[in-house]
Length: 384
Image (cartoon, rainbow, N blue to C red):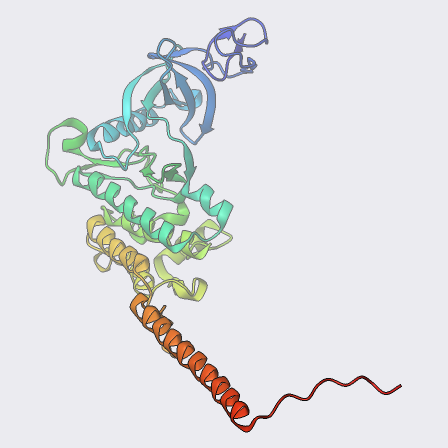
C-alpha cells in the first residue's frame, strides 16, 4: 500500500496520485499513514516528539489541512501518558488564545491511540530560527518574547501552567505570528480539569513520584528543589529562552545533568550584555530579573513581563538621536524662485549698461577723428 503525501489517498501501486499527480510514497512500518483520523486522512509525518507523532491531515472532500498529533503506540497503554495527552487537549480548548495553537477535535485511531486535531502552522520554531541565524535581531527577539508573555498570561488566567517553555515550543509563523506549543505536561487547576473545586487546588498531570517535569535546561530552581511551583516557573523558563535567543547560548551550561541543575539553583547567570553588547541595559536587567532564584524576585506575572518587553520594543523602534560628536550640521537650501528672478533682472540691467557704455565710447572716438581731419593710412604693398 502506497500513500499520497499531499492528500493521503492510498493505492496499491507507487505511481502518481489520481487526484493531484503526486508520486505515492511507501509508508513503511507507519500504520497511521493513509488511515482516517476523524474527518481527516493522515498524508505524511510532520514531526515526532517524546509523546507522539504529528501528521498532516487532509479532509478528503474539501481539502482543508490540519495537524494531527497521535500518541505513540508504546505509551498508548500507559494511563498517566493518556491522561496527560487528554489534558493537553483540554488545556488548549480552555485557553482559546490567538497566541496558542488551537485544538479542533479529539478521537482515537483505528488501533486505539488517542489523537488531537490542531491548526496547521507554517514557519519555524524559535529553536530552529536560533540554529539557523544564531543570536536573533533585537527587535525580532523582543517582539516574539512579548508575544509569548501574552500567551502565557492567557493560560495562567485559566489556571494552567505550561511547565515546558523552551525555544522549540515557541513557533513563529511565516506571517510573523507567535504560537506557544505543547501543553502536554501542563498543570491545570482542578476547576479547569474537572469544572469544579478550589481555584488554588492544582492537579499535576505527571504523577510519577520524583520525576522532574520539564526540560532540564529551562527548569526553575524551585522545580529542581522539589518545591511547589506556580506560574512564575514559566517566567523563569522564558528568561532562559530570552537569554538564549539573544546571547546565542543558555545562561547555564554543563556536561552533566546534576551540575546543570545545581547551576539553576545556585549559580548566577552571566550579564547578558557581556555576550550581547548591543542589548539595552533595561533588557539585560529584565532578563536577569526573570532568572532570579526566588520566585518573588521575578516579574509578578506574564502580563508584567510582557509590558516591560513592549516598553523596550518601543524604545528599539524609536528614532535614535545623533551622536554628540557628529560635528556641525551644514544645511544647503535651494534658492527661492523669487530670488532667482530678481537676480536675473539685475544681470539684465548690468548687461544693458555695459552695452551702452561701449557704444558711447565708440561714438566719442569717431567724433574726435572727424574733428581733426585725420584719415586712415592706406595699406601698402610689401617691398619686392
